Image 1 (cartoon, rainbow, N blue to C red):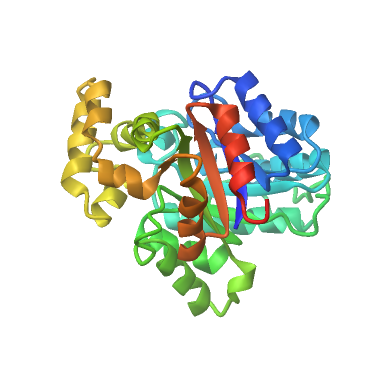
Image 2: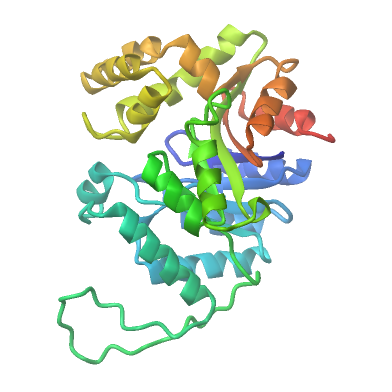
Length: 339
């Protein structure tokens, strides 16, 4: 299994911390560094900076938000970073959710599956150098002067891999059909039948060999002298996504926790968070859920925990360092297979 890290975005980590972690990951020979975006730091700017500060590590977005930019703009960004990095770009995409899509981007959160499929197809066509049709939305009248164009920049890679972030069953199915890989967040390796197996079943049903598809797990990771200390470090991550990354009744992470068997507990965490009790929300995250969807362990227990993900079918671990950031990066490098 490959080992990478995510520097996420500020305010979780400052730009300086993100650079430090990425440079260290590069020096230690880790597989990849991934950047996210929400409604603050954008992923493209940070990846451009990291392309200049690193030499070998692959660079990815986990994820870049579909409502944030037109598909042709996403293709331009991916091609640019690929050239700047010497062919190290990996493009992870996701539809975000209605709160961000509509509240921040002013973009209706409608038909996300169909939109994702069309978005991926447009990016692939643009990166392949195809002449793109005029990009006006259907039903919108323009000046009539729009011109069919080809992407001027040529990526360094013959094919930039495109990954999709998905949690719901239909999203997992589509991911297996059209993407080069799946970025799963809060993957429970003890329940591969909930997420990993469905996406791989979709790969098989589409007539695609398993070898062409990559399973990635985006996982909060804390290494501490005791398991209890490590669990406390990752608690805020789980509480934040259950509580803040979605509306009441429309939170994909709460839905995922429910499919794992923690529906009532996840709803209780969300209620506390929405009431402004962030500390109470963190405390309410069940220990068992933390143990399943995060890596919270001692240095001695880390190899076995990583192996559990590999055994479940994960090809690349994307760890979100927590607590001792640089120490966690070093521990991951030391614990990877063949280190």
